[in-house]
Length: 279
Image 1 (spheres, rainbow, N blue to C red):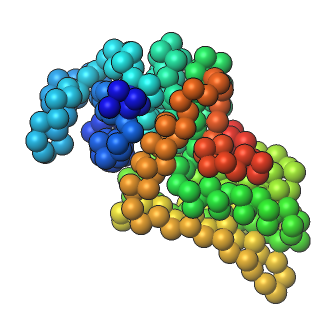
Image 2 (image 1 turned 135 degrees about the vertical axis):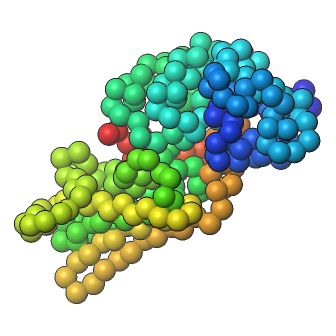
């Protein structure tokens, strides 16, 4: 189909990379225009289908992102902070829609993405799922309604291999709670408690990170008051939901004006948007 959106996938060998590839291959409105891996990787130079343990797909795994981006309309990027910043510069040159699911980005990384977004569409979210983004909206509303009489704790659990904490989704939920209270999360955040820590600071938003097994992702926002608790929770049971959300963002980003967007924009919830969280 000539009107298919050409999609590139970075980090092809990773779990999310392979999920993203399958999502693109299953989407009739998109076509896989290329995939990348780092130079020297075992997959580089091989047919993608064979590298994934299946039949040939006629797509060679490349170590040259610019060459792949040049023939694409969008790129799905769930790699590392350093790789994502590098990809953002190239995507801006090629005027691609850059969908970023990478977590662990620091402030200087975000500043570089903001610079790239002057020339290209960047859709970035700590979580690409519909349910989590609705949870973000609900978290903001509840935080706004309850005020500081209720303490807020964000609890997340992921598989044993996750390298950053709190998760990008947990931070997104924390930002939503902070926005509901009209405060800055950086000034009201508690990331860990050990030993004699003293009483909980009034108005603080706490985070707890659990790691173990093969948990895809569980997030809970707890509002604890005197004599009652309110809990908002999302449980992911299939990693493919993130890939489908990312692909939806890539299709949505076509013909949009350059700039930074979130999944709230993609889902039409922008009036409730809390902005893209900073770290």
